[in-house]
Amino acid sequence: MCTFGVEFIHFAMIEKLQGVVLRTIKYNDKNAIVRVYTDMHGVMAFLLPQGNGKVARQRRALFQPLSLVEIVADIRHGRDLYSIKEARCLQPLHSLHTDPVKNAVALFVTELLSAVIVEQERNPALFSFVAGSVVFLDRANDGIANFHICFLYNLGVFIGIEPDRDTYRPGCVFDMEGGVFSSCRPVHGHYVEGVEAEAVYRLSRITYANMHLFRFNRGQRNRLLQLTLDYYRLHNSALGELHSPAVLADLFS
Image (cartoon, rainbow, N blue to C red):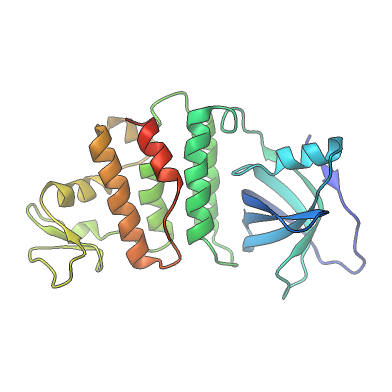
């Protein structure tokens, strides 16, 4: 079992949380800050003691990006930074951090989640989707070339920006600002038409169970990824340019 302890603070409001690790950044010479998407309070920042000993190495391994953890923490509402009493592995990941392809996909997922999930409130459906996606990626043996596209599209369902596929008709254009299909081109320039509009509609049916059936060449896959990210940016101003898509474009050629 992966566990560690830190100093207990008296009169603490102790809670047990499940979480998906997003990223760790240096805070000072003695501590780092780890951002975790939790099941009870959304995104939270925890103080993480640093060091060079065995316990410190175990701690760093426990809080790798997308690790699934259980945290017992001092939750004092109104704070921006919380103290961890103890933490352990919630679900061991066997290949996600060691397989270079899965690791590249994981970096994309982490980068995306860090940008678009900033809420500090409970969202059980979203948490279940994110945690389940991590487990699926870790356990997958092959056929993950479309995982990042499948994750990106279906994440939109849980954050409220899913395109309205019921408005689709053959020959329609896809209005990216309105998130709807239309028989007429919108007055703004944020739309796609023809085979690209049809591809957006097809993408609305993608799941982890059937994503291997979606046959895309390198150009199509990269274009779909770019279109979907552009769509996200129209509906979520927090999403800037990501670095990881360029790596994925080279991997899944």
